[in-house]
Structure formats: structure tokens, C-alpha cells
Image (cartoon, rainbow, N blue to C red; front, top):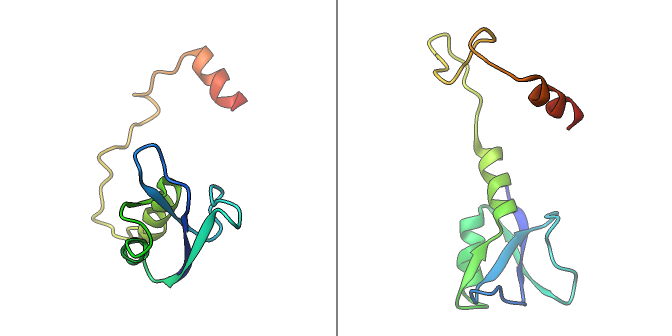
Amino acid sequence: MAAKYFICTRSQTDGSHTVHKEGCPFLPEPGKRISMGIFKSPHNALDEGNRYFSKPASCLFCEKEHHTESKRPVFSEDYVDTDYISSSQLKVSRESAMFCSVN
């Protein structure tokens, strides 16, 4: 899905300029970013970022959100989750259980 992308005018400590998707909580305020336009993927936005700065970099938050959106659920009777742990195999301490319930 297409989205509007921005590049931060202030460089990071490594000299890179971060590319953000519209709506990112880490998007810099106006005046500290450049609107690059609307792109279908973050990779296209990074390519555009090269026109503004020599070292554009993806925002880790935006990148994670993109990967989460692109995952599709698996609907198959043949699907077997090898990472599944039954409750009888799970050993949980009282402190751990209390901590999880607080969070």
C-alpha cells in the first residue's frame, strides 16, 4: 500500500538520514524533515532518499511495521507449528507470572 515518506534533515551519529513513513511516532516535526512523496514500498522511498542525502537509512519502527503488514496468516490443515509449547511443558515461577500480569 502506498504511503507518504519523509527524510530527516538532521543526520544520525553515523552520518545517515532517517526515512520515515507518515504516521511514524518518531517522525521529526515540520522544518526538520523533507517530504519525498508517495511510494509503494520503503525501498522505493530509500532510493528517493539518495537524491537528498548520500546515506539514507530506514527508520527501524517503520521497517518493522512494514514487515508486520506484509505477513499473511497461514490457513492450512497441513501447517504444524514447531515452536508450540504445551502448558505441561512450560515451567513458570510465581514471580514471573506476577510480573507478566502486572505488565
